[in-house]
Length: 171
Image 1 (cartoon, rainbow, N blue to C red):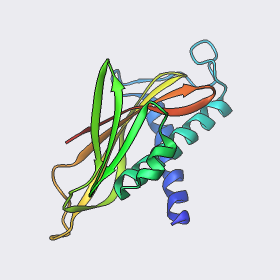
Image 2: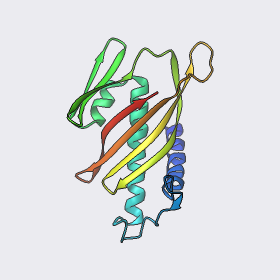
Image 3: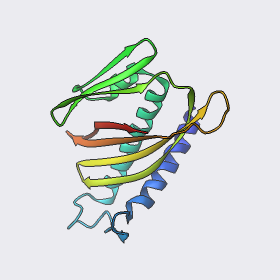
C-alpha cells in the first residue's frame, strides 16, 4: 500500500507542477514560482507546500473513501466535527455563517477506484483550492459508477502548516 501511495504522490506532484504553470482561466503562462515580485516564496518552499498539500489531499481522500472517522478527526482542524453513526460518516463545520453537514462516507453501491485532479486555484501563498474527481466502480457491474463525485478541498496555511479549511462535494 505504501508503494502505491508513493507512486500516487509522485504522479500528483508532476501533475501539479504542470497545472501550476498554466492559468486555465486565461490560458497564459504563470510567472515562475521563484519570481519574488509576484510570489514571495522561493522554489523550495513552493515545492514543499505542494507536497504537503497533496499528502493531506491523498490522506483525506483515503480516509473518507474508507469511512475512517478517526483519521478524519486527526487531520481536520478543531472547528470541524466528525460524526460516525451506523454506516455513515459526516463532517460538520461552519462556513459563511452556516453549519455545513457533509456526508463523506456511506450507503454507496460502488467501490472507490481512484481520483484525478481537475484543477488548482492557487489564490495566494496562504490559500489554495484543489478540485478532484473521484472515480468509483459499481459493485454489481464493475463499470464506472455514474455520476462521478467531485471534491473541492480548500487549504489554508495556519501557523506555517497547511490545514483543510473547507470541503465541498458535488455530483
